[in-house]
Length: 132
Image 1 (cartoon, one colour):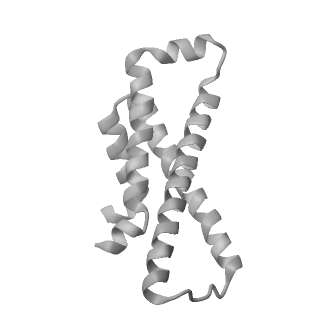
Image 2 (cartoon, rainbow, N blue to C red; image 1 turned 180 degrees about the vertical axis):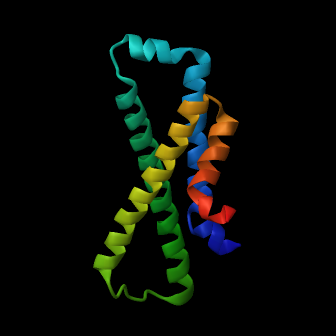
């Protein structure tokens, strides 16, 4: 259970619901007409939403990893990082993975204009391999 929470997937799901909620609320409140009326394209608005929420996710995971590093260091000692280039590459891969999932949740929220349906499709469709 700890690996599930510390793996970052639960936090990612929370940020996916946040993204779907923001998009659905923009449509529900009628603010999208104001956004488009000011000359901001929907594409740039959605991209800014994906980049902002992905950046917030990366910051939250960075803070959590610092706390977990301090916790692990206090219990097990300093240790070493054998392959720092692979660690940096895994961070870049995780950022791309997060942006893909959040953009998929935004896309589903745009298509359905509903938080619940957008979040459920955002969770289930990327994991289509589980349906087999």
